[in-house]
Image 1 (spheres, rainbow, N blue to C red):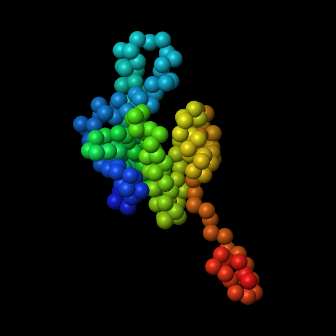
Image 2 (cartoon, one colour; image 1 turned 120 degrees about the horizontal axis):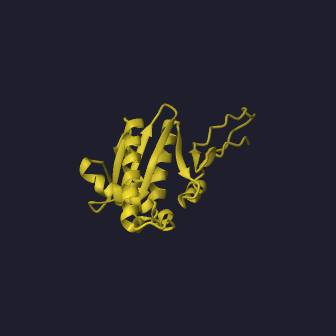
Image 3 (cartoon, rainbow, N blue to C red; image 1 turned 60 degrees about the horizontal axis):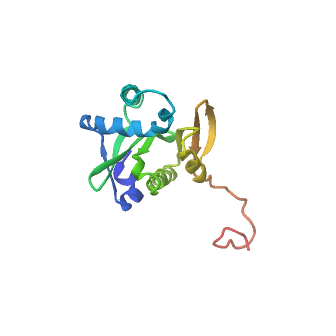
Length: 186
């Protein structure tokens, strides 16, 4: 996927993107941990045990992504030169797969996720493809996806496979007479 075209709206919002590097693993682990904080707050473990568990979970997820999405774009989301999140995307024959998007808690709720999703939807429209993502049912972003027109296409237990696709162009039968700019025969 061409990242120069991909995220023009996000760039207009002051975001930058770069490929992840080995030196980013500590940040990415902290980011992952922030996405699981609420869930683990209910577990009666000492903080050290939570941290160890989250580090293992992050490593397993990261290894899975690298193994199964070898050609994907694994990007850091940057603001003013500092990492604030991650965006993992892959382009397939019939879809753009949003593998993962996450922002640090302080950067959530500012419209950045909506902007990035809008960019992906624009690219998908230009390329005649759908955008698909696995979204945890309990994830607050599930509501955002629904607001943007994503629909659940498969129930995957704790996840929903959600899809957004461009409106298909409807071919209407030709009507007698002149067609107005709104596509209605006059």
